Image (cartoon, rainbow, N blue to C red):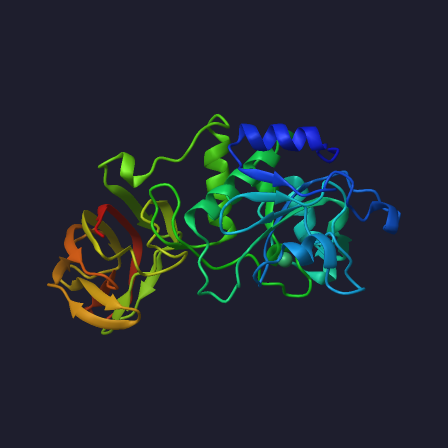
Length: 364
Ligand SMILES: [Zn+2]
């Protein structure tokens, strides 16, 4: 149970966290509390949005979305400059109805399930802080580095103030019973990470990283260090590999992906322009002694195969088969790399474990 932040608490928390901000006139009194008879709070989390438009401040602060949805439409507006405009510290019309199952998970700081209207609904505007990040939401429009950095800091500032974990950070798409898709879109980069898609899992991980440091902390950037980036991917569960067809390894476990090239549950482990060096450790069950599973790196442009690299052969041994294959390569711009396996035995083999570790040097 937490009371909404006061103007003084907002200013202090944002300054401490390094959030650049300006205060819109009237932000300390603007809100929907009196008009709805429902005072804002207690608060349980943050809700992140994209505006799906440009120059959205006027709509968010003054115009709303017509008579049905009066302003303010958020507590904060985050344009591409990364300088937040404080719009309101009271009740705002940003969340709409939240599915109760998602809302309860935010309250409990547990993983947020898909919003299920059948569990009931909660008025998210009663209890969630809202930030609107300026982005068209078309999957092409990019969140500049400064904008994403501020988004992480704003969420962390609120969590730190209330003593919350990153589990209190949610996206509109995680609560909406109307199928809202925000926030989403490509991000230019963050810290030492190159371009990556905005997902709530990534945003929460970045908030968690901030909260583990002092509020004055900044993520290290590539310019400050010659250290390579680290990628460490694997499998959540083993899977069956049928005989006779080349099959891509889908990396479902991501322990580290500093380069940001691996999309969740994707096959790509590094994208160019880059050089990389590493290893792939495989454990296979059920491969008959003397039979072979072939392993090769496949270079792609999008989904098109551009080059296949030399094959390594893993030969079945008694008591399970273990192999480590070295990965070294240079990838040009627009190229990405994945790993393919071909089971040459006559029966299904279980790919019990795949662990990929690589150091990645980005080129420009
Ligand atoms: Zn939204």
